[in-house]
Length: 107
Length: 303
Image (cartoon, rainbow over all chains, first blue to last red; front, side):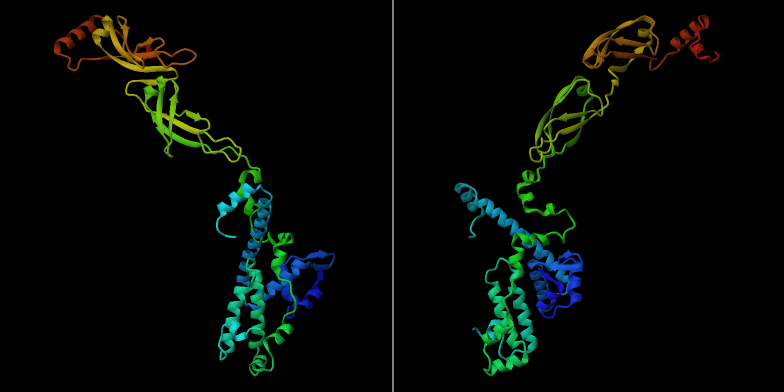
């Protein structure tokens, strides 16, 4: 967990106004503890990523919204697939073999 | 440590603009968070960032070109250990950022709801009904019939038209509709029946009505005449002196019904000869003069 001040200090070049804007846009979802805003490790990594995309890779804000949306959907699917893989893992050998055969080549 | 120019795929003479362009292109292709399935992305991204850190900065580039610093020396200053977003997003905690983008219920986009449909969503619903409209002949509707019907999907069904079916009535074929969702029962096929009118017969509840044209002689003297009914011809006795508009009842010759078949009601229609000759007219007029009668009396019309 990190406060706003700490986070701004950790990312060189990030301004308080910019961070606030990302929070307002819903791109970053910190928790609030009374008056204080708290960023967990996921939030911090996400702020770093958005900073990279906007200031390093020069993706404009309107495009960035699309990029983040697709990215979030991608991660959701990845987590779903991982859960599915875990469920497959628990199946009897013949079931797993049948699934593997059906999915084909990859792996 | 690899040569920064080589990493960025540019010549030693590249302009700052070319270097920047090459960097952006490669960085987008290798940012680990944008390529979560690419295991080599992180190492490539770091190398690209290090390379750009040197050659993207005019002073550092000059020092590197003159051999003052090497690629790795700069790298350690620029690249503090960092956590990329992908390791968080791939973990269970990444769930936090699933929601904000879609307007719809998050479950709509649930991969497993699609995969396992009914079971996961616990959805059970009766299948949709299929509706058809078809026409049958009057006699088929009245007497009942078996029809073989080809549906829109090519399926053939045997349709049993019950005797006495009314115009506009709907027949329900249970389970012949669209399949149900999950454990839900299939839908029904609903066939709305339109009954074509008949040239002779009219239906009035369970009664059948028809009109029987008769000659003056048959009406006056009485007769036994064949009459078409819905179940074939029968002999009808016309009593002597039957007037036009007389209704004769053929009991039980109407529409079959559980409560007992209806009747067939035959209305007599007295028809003059096509060409009445002078003799006939004279005879009738003379007869009328001797035996005046008042057909409009009952309706209060003065004669």
